[in-house]
Length: 185
Image 1: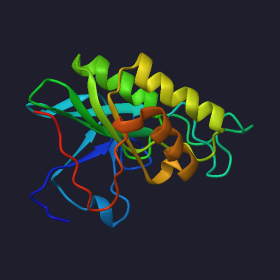
Image 2: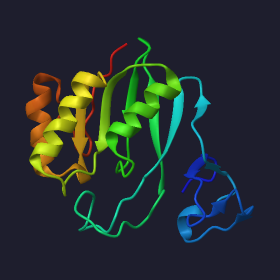
Image 3: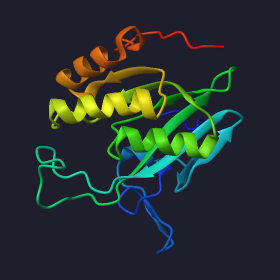
């Protein structure tokens, strides 16, 4: 880790900070730096560079996701996503695993910035969901939320990636390690 690079970490008591209790600790090697900031709300870190803060209503165990679970775990798990403004004023939205729901991250990014979403990429966390659910979600993101292009990766799941590819057609972007994706100006 480069200590001169600012590390933004979700404000979460289990990860190291709890605003209500005013306590801070840094578990594990990942958080051993004095150049870090706990983020508990949307934040513009530089002009046109936004951190989008969301929390998961529940994520469940890795094999029991909503709506297929009885006992949700990790309630209110915080998550940061990155929103970059293009020269045209739209956003490129980069999610991690979208535990908060990719649609909720898109809604929050639009609300926080007032901008539309040109491209959303990252993990959409959809592998445990039915094809019908994923199809409805992909259509909603495209038609109702106005996400122009989608580039689903890793924890989205192979079947869900194929559904997004079908719904988005030529506006689906195949991405993977080392992929370079041209952005609009």
